[in-house]
Image (cartoon, rainbow, N blue to C red):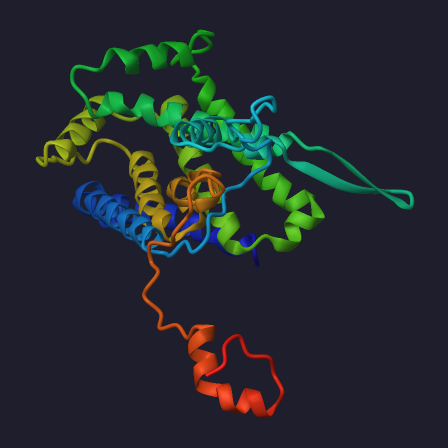
Length: 330
């Protein structure tokens, strides 16, 4: 059920898009209303989640410190793993976001005979890195549908992505990498017993949804051709708030678009929000300077205190009768 239900859900989404456009002819709904709605839900949900995280109290300074901290002058500090200033935090965040530095140190524990063995595990890091960078290139390539003229940077990325010059139309390497990375991430959840045990339907659904988007895009480019001119016109119309829907684009395009809209609407309420959450994590965005600057929780409120002097004044006679020592006689 953990695998079958999310897979069935993605198939139903694709069927809904096909039925809505090819049988019921609701092209305006699937081509205009739903994209705008999904974008609004994505932006509102993303901002809501980030603001909620920003409002969460951080009572202690808890940065991750897995390197040598700032100490004596002759001891070399690890300014990336254990930063004590803003620039060190920025450097660590850049490496974390672009290269998944913490995931690179991922380890695996195996039982070999009667002993536990610990070793490096880089496949998860490589698969995640391949997926995220491929996804970024695919998104940037799609900007050619929303801009006129097409920016030079987008043209350069498109040329770099298809530099092998394979097939007609040219094969994009990121299409292959994206499907390969998603397939690996799925198989890892199925094959590795420990990961399979803790995986939920919420872990499989975004994988199937992303695979559906990737596969439908590949089918649309290499097998089921669509009217690119009409696609460009629709995309430009959506950008300029003057969309015009054509019935001749093709069913596969509406399936692809509806799956993207589903991903946008689902994104802020899912585990995919780690894309924004990484910047709000106090273990990453705080400097380890608690020995240099006193960290004061900004959410602290004034608390009525009862000092020892006040305590002794209140209970002096009882303490004297009980034979307890007094700091001052009164």
